[in-house]
Length: 332
Ligand code: COI
Picture 1 (cartoon, rainbow, N blue to C red):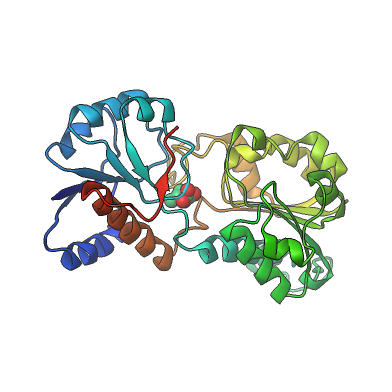
Picture 2 (tube, rainbow, N blue to C red):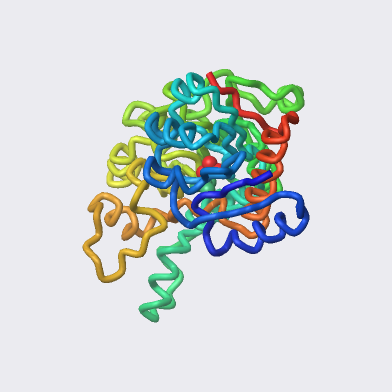
């Protein structure tokens, strides 16, 4: 049995080797290259492929992989929005993802950044750097005084709720799929509009499906409370970023936590030092004192990365051995 892995970063290599050691019967080969029509042949002879990339898995890419004899593909991440599913179905692909590698990684990041916005930490840091040690006007808001609205109560949303409750916040939630335990405890409001109207901090934990695209826009921001904090550690397309910028400019939006961004592909996780920065809107956001930009790193912890690698290889081995993988993706 042979498994070929694409786009293995240096920080993933120890976990690949750990898995390989635990599975001496499996031959493991990997590259740091992304899966593209050009690199598909690298996997020739393997029984399955382990992949991760934000680049689209296009019809051409899937076709090229299938032409090299591989239709068992295991993602190391959760999001499946960049796969041409119709083509995958046509080619008979079996796909797995890792939906739960560490909800805490993402939820913690969201909570930490939201709290930093509330305390105006970036402004205070900038003052420190200038040796301006005065308190005012950089006064904070306590988390316990906020109503925190959580959009999406899957694994990540639930951990985020627990953390914010730990700080003493009042937590409300919205989801089209209601979790019975949360429903029993009365967390859910009836509509997204209700959540937007009541929450001081709004955090998104929903997938990038068509119905959610630009759910944060001029109209929904207008419904929100003055001084709202918006958190997007989920997917860039959920937010009309320029609408948030207008909200920041008017003062309606107190702060924005942005770990994911509509224009992030090809920009995040690249070194732009000494080069022309490719996105003026992004540069503006990074420079704002009440915006905390991180380059899609909410997930990026040792705990998460290890699980992403190990679970993806486990899934792929199950596929190639004809067993039921732990977390199959519905190819439809
Ligand atoms: C995912 O797991 O889908 C993520 O968003 C993290 C990924 C970019 C590594």
